[in-house]
Length: 143
Image 1 (tube, helix red, strand yellow):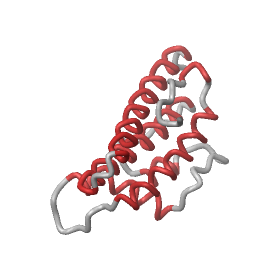
Image 2 (cartoon, helix red, strand yellow):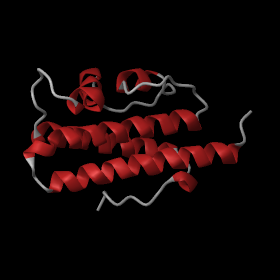
Image 3 (cartoon, helix red, strand yellow):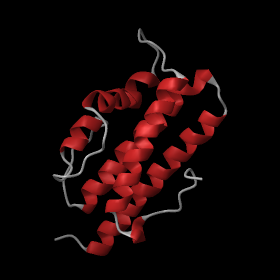
């Protein structure tokens, strides 16, 4: 059985990284630069992915190396619902890789990433309620 203090330290590290991602996304969104929407999407996805992984670690649930939010959400304990549809989870998952490289796909819009940010902040809030206070970092983006 893993040392509970070590587990909490790892969870805290994941939360700190997730908070960094949501802070970056929030600040870039405020710039209102449409050309940066894909970057916002990336950091939004990363925030959600890291929060889910933090909760999985806290619950002692192994997970694969993936950016797929749907796959990670399926591993969450029963009764934990991110309150986003599978299609919303899939869309947010796309921000991890597909928006990072040029190609034949439509650009992400500011409207899309604002909607995704709202969903991710809601899921983030739900996950934070399930974690002990000792692992939570100061939230700069909830002002």
